Length: 113
Image 1 (tube, rainbow, N blue to C red):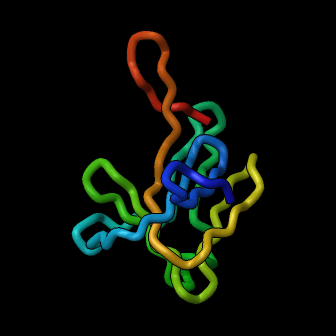
Image 2: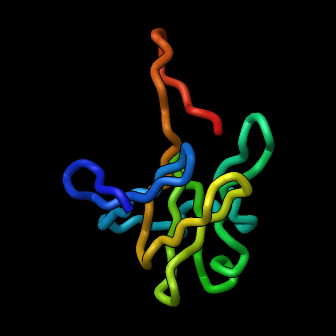
Image 3: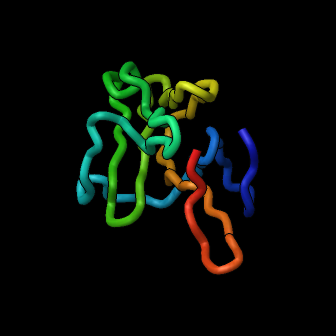
């Protein structure tokens, strides 16, 4: 785990950040992503995804507008996997899922893993 600004805990896997949030988010207003895929790599097609065992245990990945959230269940949190990165384990809680961005001199764009 690493520490974000204002002591907000976050975890990172490649170009994806998971920022733990305390604010209540009504995930029922979003679209559940039942396959658990957070993002696919541009070059390889490998995906950052919530492990099937975490989804079966109650983890929930939701797209809400242009944002994505992950709720890690009380029973063991959630495991995030990727073929080219080691798995990370997120404790119980709600997370904003954020793709890393970079400035190319003209505009901000997403970093592709």
